[in-house]
Length: 442
Image 1 (spheres, helix red, strand yellow):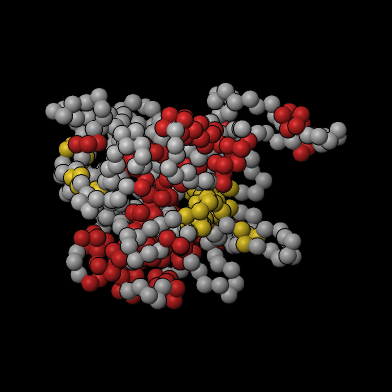
Image 2 (image 1 turned 135 degrees about the vertical axis):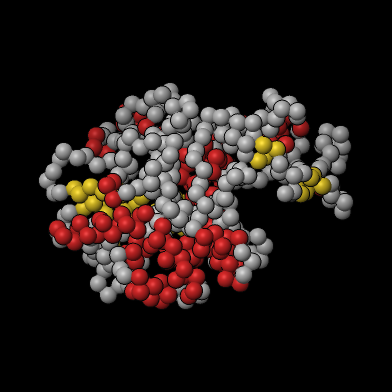
């Protein structure tokens, strides 16, 4: 497996100060950088790498890598081979398999338990390579087990109905997809995905009680052996009765309602459907949405996951990096997901960023940030009367957070230092946020 990357090389402007790099013509003969075959194995986990990926402290004869397993510190179980029906869709060259791989994102959405809440920027849709660009926060959303009146069921609600009715609803919502492939994938999910039985079990419990304030919590059960990633079972479903306080739910728990829940009357005087956000720290965050990448419902990353070899916590970044590396003995549905793999990477990047922001917000004192519980806000107010109820807690992003004010200010100072060294500037990109930040520090 080889890849060829084209690079543009420009001479240093110091050598030719009168002929700046940005104004030089591009040579027709561009140098080609060939990384060669991706056949160098990590000595710790045996993941495949290009030789250029080795850490600088290792030699060419004994290369070592960190991006896969952090030199043996991270170890996860091998992904199971998908069911034969799904396996054939990933590897065959039949028209059905090619259609499946081409529209894998739509097939996954038709089978998913949770929906994706995100603003997709479609201005990047071009005839070139596929692009998945998002704006703002990315969320996985879950609704009730029963739909609203006069509304067709969707996502997890389809697993409550019998197979024939669920198939008819999926066909009505996905007319552009192959009916044969939809039927095959639906059967695979019902036969192999363990979350199908969990949602069925939760639905039966809630239907027995038939009370609007009864809920089911899908918890991250403590004590699970992270070396084997025990698959979920019906025993992990607990009924939370109203008025009981001995079980305190965690914010990461997935709460299931039998019937739709609504927000109170808003400014427009109407009730709005309430959807629950699935926390990225729940082990079911990825399996409930990327069902074609995790057809058995294998548990994903969760907060508190530890490495069996070192007993140290595994971060979401380390978990994701480990999963996207290839091994000779593993059939990775993730790496064969094409556009779904692209969406998975964007999802994981957004989740990693959100986890990092949550850590910054909860660890302000450890980051040596001046936090005076709103005292700075009170001092800065010009009004003599201060309403203490309106004061909040300031959260300051450190320079290690890429894109934050401290990071942007540091980049601005670096740019000004470069401009002072090279004197004349060829091109200056004026970013609104950077310019405002620069003006504030002049």
